[in-house]
Structures are given as C-alpha cells and as structure tokens.
Image (cartoon, rainbow, N blue to C red; front, side):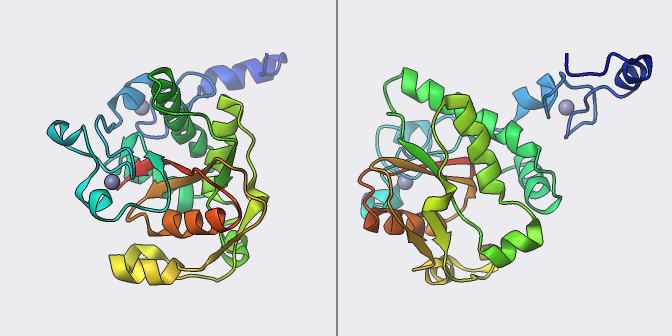
Length: 237
Ligand SMILES: [Zn+2]
Ligand SMILES: [Zn+2]
C-alpha cells in the first residue's frame, strides 16, 4: 500500500483523490488522466510509416509525399497522438510548466502503440532508447529533459534500456518553434554528437514537428554506428 496507514494519512487520501491533469476530475490512483480524458485523446490512425505524418486512409499503403521525394535519415517513426487540443496543452505543461509527471501519461500512449505495432509484426524492438538531448544550458533552465522523462517511462514499460549518455548537443540552438522549415534544418544541422551507438536505437522526443531535429540526431547516430533508426514521439504535428 502506497498510502500511510496512519489515520491522518487515510483522511488526507480520502480528501485528495488523484486528479486528472486535464479536467481536474478524479483519476485512477497513480494515473495522470481520467479514463474519459484518456479515451478522448486525438489519436492518429493512419500515418506515414517513415515519418509518422498523419495520412488519409486512401494514402495508407504508401509513404507521405515528402518521404517519397526525400526520405529522412531514420527508417521508421511512430507518434500515436495528433498535436491538437488537448495534447498540445499536455506537451506545453510537460515542457514549460515543470509538470514532469505528465511524461508518464504520454509515455503510456507511446508504449501502447509500440505494442500494437509489434503484435501486428510492423515493428521490431530497438536495442536502446536515446532521448533527444537538451543543451546543458537549457537543461539547467528547465531542470529536466522532457524527452528523457518520457523515454524512461517507455523503457521501463517495454523493458528496453535507455541510454541518454550516447548523444549530446554540442551547440546551444535557438528554439525551433518560431523558425521556418528551412531555418529549423540549418539551426540543428551538426548540433548533435553521438558515440558508441547501438545498431538499432530509437530516438525518443516529446513531439516531432518538421522532423529536422530527429533527422539531425539520426545523422549523428548513423555516424556513430547505428544502422536502423526508429523515432518514437508522443505526438506528430
Ligand atoms: Zn479528465
Ligand atoms: Zn513521411
């Protein structure tokens, strides 16, 4: 039993049940979202197997237009949630609100999708999870790396080791959110340095937007010996 056996502890537990991070209603103990909010999360049903971009059902047999023209440096990407309300709020809360515990809710979504795809024979388990690193300066500002928090929960859930020490950011890059697609690529090009990469790592991030960051990291992991690269994110914009 996690709660205190003292009478005071029992009273406090009864008065303060676990609250849902979205609707503030009661949530099952130890869960960040209530069952209703979790069921209502916007999920992506059909996506490009290469970059996880949502596709119409009619396109589902192939790659998205962009990957067909110029495939990314990673081989397979998975992102169960659409970057719409309320996923955007959860991700902002995780990143800027210091609510690191939201990582568990998002990690649960990734792990569930990984299991689904593995059962359907669409995915082979990676050797290790490598979270997208923050520059030490940004890590000091934020106090934690949201990608690493997510990776730790996913790794624990699926029994895959997490190796954050493999890659680091060598440059303090600008925040990507206000940059154009082209600027994003230039901003992160050569920003990562990786060593002793496993053969089949999965890069883990909270959200993949244009894919520029994970592509730059995939290039660094390939240079360090990785042969087949997955990208796992909670959401794809
Ligand atoms: Zn709720
Ligand atoms: Zn694609």
